[in-house]
Image 1 (spheres, one colour):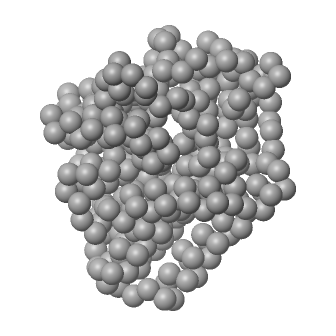
Image 2: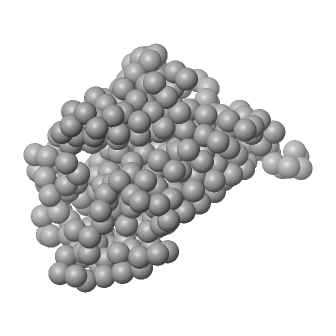
Length: 338
């Protein structure tokens, strides 16, 4: 049973930060899983497929060396009713993230760290909706008491083997992103594809370490209002070790900007990304918010609150449970086509 995992989640959040900030600073692109997933399924390219491939590949080293870090997912659909329910969930996830222009990665991790007002609004909408849905409507999983009947907010710590594996993976990621990549890779299409794969690999590993790939753990974080003894605060650490470092990285090394007075020189770090010629950041503003954006954010929040699944974790679970993945991804594609 899921419980508070401060070490796992903190190290996982650092990997989420590395994957998303690395993609921004090296490739000049935002790590928005919902659009990357939709693109890889409907409009595959060298910009989105390597990231999704890297995300899926993250399961391999974890399964080989530390399988205890792979979530115990709910039972895969074993009836037409369950398949149709999963298809419907995928449809809502696809429709909501398409119209809300993002999810927990694009808006909450990347957008908030860039201090995007539009992402702050989207995050506030879908997070509030998810909290209300998880607490006041039936969820997709029956959340029993945690191990031994203890409150879920009591901390548990990794074994020596788990700690060693996670620390080595985190240090290796830092060395890859900030030592090896700038020295070995040059600005080119091929280099961007290589790092896109690495960023997906890092991000997927972060999802597994942090617990965000575990739908039960996500739901235990969301239900704290009405079921305090089953509240698992782990995912709050994603803010501390994922969003805040991303914010610092963006302000210090991100796109160079003129300061407000315009006379004291540039602010920020780089005129262009390490491996790309230009920055490719969202240009929409608060003025572009419409009813679809608000409704999409609400629908995504409802889906997240009911099932504890967002696009990144859905990719990982699809690889572990292909039957669930087939129905979920089919629904996701349909939601993006409507």
